[in-house]
Image (cartoon, rainbow, N blue to C red; front, side, top):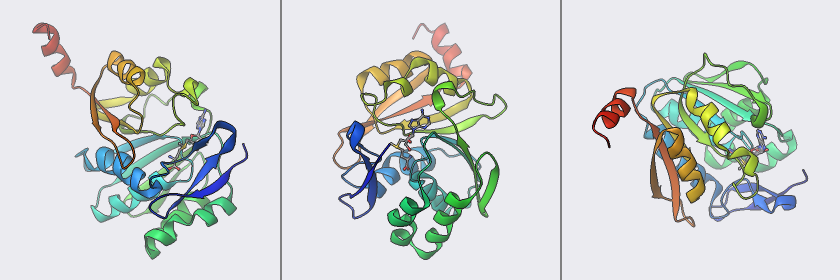
Length: 234
Ligand SMILES: C[S@@+](CC[C@H](N)C(=O)[O-])C[C@H]1O[C@@H](n2cnc3c(N)ncnc32)[C@H](O)[C@@H]1O
């Protein structure tokens, strides 16, 4: 897919795909959105000291970079799985230059996140490991021995890419989530909210990042909670 780079409201750039008229991040701020939706309402909100994350759509690597920085700051041993069908070029990575905008150390991490090998678990920094998967989520079988604590669901919008936002895909992910796992996404579409709730996530509609009214966060309830709810007919 051909793309262009655009500048967003907080000064950080993002990729724009004219073919589907869709940016990789909010035009109201790429770094702002990523930090707000995924890092703060996902990673920071989950209290596990050593979480396992699964990201849908590695893209520019911005979510991975901001998570790595936060993991280092808070000494949280973090394992980050991420899937991407269309990896971006080195040239695009250099032009986006997210590391340079954030800090010197961030540049080093950003470069390493992109240059490291796919399909392998790689240590990026003392507390952050990444495993990049070059595959299509639609026919990808999640390894059942890997259990996720936090899901960053960052596919293109449900109107642009409906095949990514299906009950089958959500079920596949849910099955591989730990009790108490979080599912965060920038989308707040009613249909997505209902699908996630049907699968078993307890859904909260939170205030969205700048320019967006809402976002969604799902929590996989502990089995005991579900049992109690059934017993009490809730
Ligand atoms: C909204 S962008 C993700 C932004 C990304 N998280 C970031 O921080 O830059 C959606 C991403 O999903 C990827 N994608 C699209 N279809 C996919 C598929 N079938 N399987 C896996 N990834 C896909 C796109 O190439 C794109 O990188």
